[in-house]
Image (cartoon, rainbow, N blue to C red; front, side, top):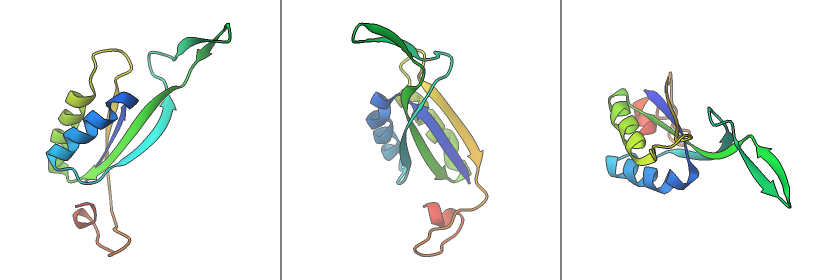
Amino acid sequence: MKKVEAIIKPFKLEEVKEALSELGIQGMTITEVEGFGRQKGHTEIYRGSEYTQNLLPKIKIEIVLPDQQVEAVVDTIIKSARTGKIGDGKIFVLPVEEAVRIRTNERGGQAVS
């Protein structure tokens, strides 16, 4: 099993969720996060004063799935989240040693399907 973590622009969330749903992904965790990468934030003006906003709002999507679905999920996220501009985000793929469904005590792949 693998865990796919994707950091995307907030306005792309619905498009990514729909694309993953069409792929058959049934569960994911969505978190509002803040961060920066190469773009290092941006400058804004508030009440006539200029200030730097270092942390930009992003959305983090987390999905745990069988190894054979990883490539399709990553490709789907790329296609649906890409704008072609700086700050589109990142995708991380991590190994998952164990998963347990609390309600039924199912383990492994059964716990995430």
